[in-house]
Length: 378
Image 1 (tube, rainbow, N blue to C red):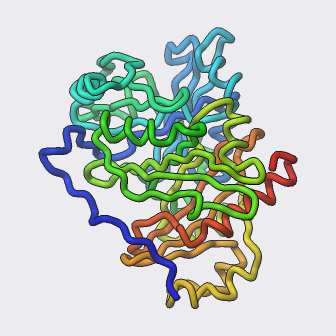
Image 2 (image 1 turned 135 degrees about the vertical axis):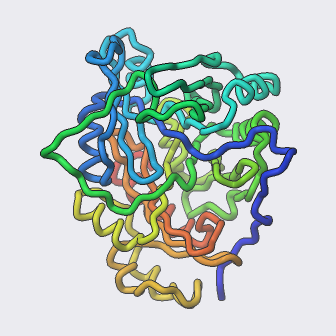
């Protein structure tokens, strides 16, 4: 019997969408050492280091490296001085995501309208200029210390934005591994806060609730959580929001909140067109993944039906499969990629499916609980 979930029809852009978003512009991480982080993402995840901002470019308090793979842009930023806001953020949260930037056609309008609807302003609209043109950007707050920056780049033809210069090394050329774009970003918030931020994204940014999961959907013998997925008008931005639910032991969301010291981005899902190749490359480069018992694969085809990929290869790599009325998806989750058990990654390949792997929740969360038990935080 196939495990499926019904989703509403794909959203379409219309005049009612007051905040058209073209896609994820970049994700900025505040980290302890930007240069070492750039090496990690290049060597382990196949990103290319293409841009730099620091002392040599006139930035006296922070340094940043821009790493790119296909449509994915990560900005890795660390503090140069102890009084930098980056230093304060890192001291509290460890390596973590500060900014999920959104690419828009009119950053000033996006800022003004969302603030009018109740958003807390962080940075007023500003124009950044260099010889390649200008970028307009402005920022609002969301859960915890996370922000959204609206980026307008229609009048800019440079590398990334003013303040960055190209970075090259003729002797070092990390190879891409097939990661293509950001599929979704998941936020963890405190008990009782999920609906507050569902309403924030709905009322302030005009998003719609795409799908909801309660503690009956996402639970094991020991832990549970609830989640609602918010999506913008054209469906290019998807933000699942998690909160803990009552359970016998401490859930993964509670562990995250304890170590991150507040709400924040739990994981980023990166899409690929060939998950077998991508995961093989990641594993060979030292990235560690969660694994489910091999018994998961004994009934896989009975549950999801015919798939293109050899089940034995999926089992060897630990890749999960789920189906919905539109097709199926393949997904796998890394272990945390920094010392604190906070941020991790999902690698996902969609073959028509628009859902989020409901049929895999139990197996996935039991795998996370095994990791929590080893850390002594379950």
